[in-house]
Image 1 (cartoon, rainbow, N blue to C red):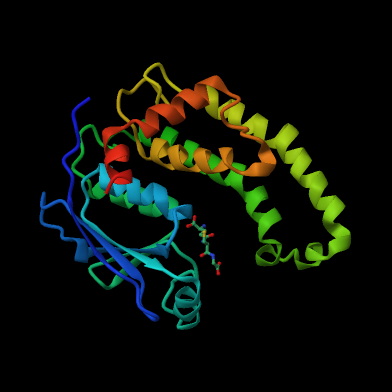
Image 2: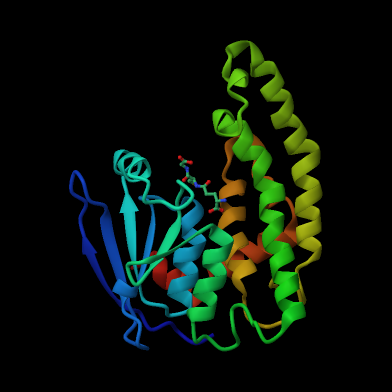
Length: 250
Ligand SMILES: N[C@@H](CCC(=O)N[C@@H](CS)C(=O)NCC(=O)O)C(=O)O
């Protein structure tokens, strides 16, 4: 596989009130890092697939990595459309929140060939969308369990509820997650990517390349992803993409 030509990377450190900003400039097109500002916390989380996708697709952007207290100020200022991150701000004015929407937008802005989200192939896009939607089937119960108050289940934070939460964790580990992961595994095509026999990754692979690694590392689920040989091979294939390796070394 061809090696990856790195962008120009510059870093501006965080201050008390401003985020750490990393800019990736590919000089490939009209767009500059200033045109696309990704806002998220200063860790991987739900932004990492977007960062990797933009990097792989040679889409210049600036990565604004907020500390928690800075996010709290941003949220209370009302500037975030849905009160959450990640969001992608385009040319300083238009804001696109929601991971899947951002992944699609970044893929459309990329000139990568074959496309990371081929809008001229509606069925392929339908398959990619369906796979992306599986993300919420897999992760919603985990997020609800971890952030109960965000979903109105505050009362389950009571210590007397912890046996119930343990039951939830057990059910997720033994039944719910294995079923979803088995379905996902069956979608791996002959070339190792999700959804079909196409030879290059799409936004579905970028999403799950990051998200399955995260799930696999959650202690309570005991490396649940790598128990499936095909998913393990998928994760290895993703981590070995020249762009992914280059991003890690940037
Ligand atoms: N549906 C949204 C969920 C985004 C989300 O859950 N963001 C979290 C961080 S991972 C957040 O902003 N949490 C802080 C809050 O809700 O106040 C997406 O897919 O982008």
